[in-house]
Amino acid sequence: MQGGLELFVAAQMPDMRDIRVENLAPISSVGNARQAWGFDVQWRDGSARDRVSCVMLVKAEAGQLETQVRPEFSTVRALWGTGVPVARALWMDARGEAIGNPFFVTERVAGTADMSLLRRPSDDAEARGIALDLANAAARLHQLDWLALGIGDILPATTIDDAAATQVAYWLELFERQRLEPLPVLVFAFGWLRDHPPPTHRVSIVHGDLRFGNLLYDDGRISALLDWEMVHLGDPIEDLAWAYRSLWSLEKFLPVGDFLRRYSDLTGTTVAPAHFLYWRLFNEVKHSIISLTAARSFNDGRTRNIRHADRATTVTTYLSRFMEWLP
View 1 (cartoon, rainbow, N blue to C red):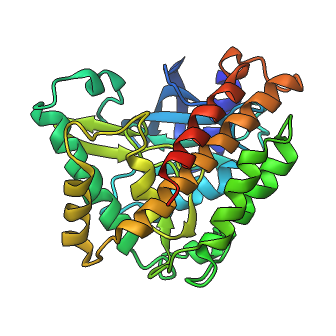
View 2: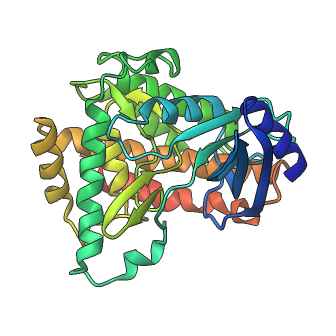
């Protein structure tokens, strides 16, 4: 891997001399769609030697998502300098020619993604600060002029008239392809979502997996939003509802009402309860399909990741929540 990576980096920096890749090592991560590696690049520019610390995100074997690296890399690159906290995107090998799998490289950002923060007392100031900063980051992301950034050339188009329908159709197609059994409750859930779309007031860049665990934080502030594998154009309220799912919710540090008020103050957008509820319901279905995709990948022998073996069992919990919340 190191030799292939060094040749790849040298090709990206043709004006530099004596390019070396050093300290290549895997980074511990709970992510499933990408395998993270850290490394340093040293080079000589004239008489001066310089270096940069990098993170390489390698497309993993089959698992819980069916995503490519190009939309993720291109979106993160477009967001650099917009005020949305992201790592600086450096290089991409979308065809996997250098090391055998597609990957992209970003500059390393200071901070940690340590999930143990969720076990802190409810009055923890750092946790509350991160929750508020997540609302800040979401507001900034959702207000960007994505057309001016060229995102319309990166991600599939959608409109305010079909934002919800587009997402329902996308996940329904995955469900019908990945399920291992009929799951009639999930069929019903898709029908309900299709028949009750909320009015979308703005099409925005939607992170798609905006939550604690997919961000780096440092001294009570978010230093980078990570894991953009599910980025798309759509209804921004989808992100807000996803951020407060029970598996990773910051509710005990910042009630969801306070989170939404911070977001509304920054965007001028009032989040109607029924609108928020729709996307909460949608996200239980969405996570069900992610789990079914993981289980199918393991069942078909396309991954050896033991964490995917029993993922289908989580669907009962998610659908129970859907039925409990159903108006």
